[in-house]
Image 1 (cartoon, rainbow over the protein chains, first blue to last red):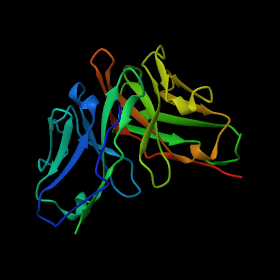
Image 2: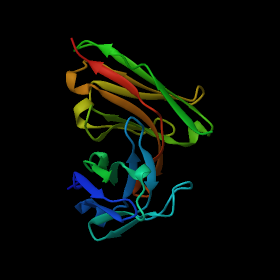
Image 3: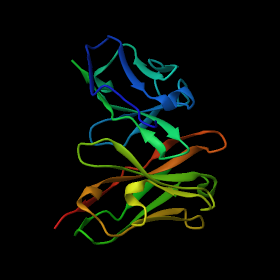
Length: 108
Length: 123
């Protein structure tokens, strides 16, 4: 299957740690990627190849993967981290690029 | 500065046609594959089309096959999406994105996104 499943929402208080998960069979064989989309803006790549961080992305944003589960961790959450987060993988035999449904991170 | 700028989005009637454009700057356009990604109002991201560096390889998501055509002009640093037989469900913000990875590497992802252009299909 090429589906990626994310929880619709995650809420944390400032300074706490937020964890957003993404599950799918494709992840056992494919790399996972994460994008952050703030309201009214285009998505921004924040994690590539499961755990690599592009330049300019703060170190408190990290990624990991275990089996078919990808996890985005944001340590010391700040108000500016409030956004929609999408996971993505590749299904080279079907839809080519697949996205999770997105998770709304709310900073309380 | 690496940049992608989309244009061409507007209000169009069902069954109509529209051509979206994306102009790139700040990088060697011909060295990168490209995607169109769209986002319906209040919904998630949806990949719709891919084109390789030389246009040799092209892919579409099932819902737009036969209606949308992706193309690129490496001399002009431009990407296009010709859309026809438009439906209300095609209403979305359309993003042009730079692609990293390949089928040989077994992964694809988008490291640069434009700001998007809005297509509204309605009578």
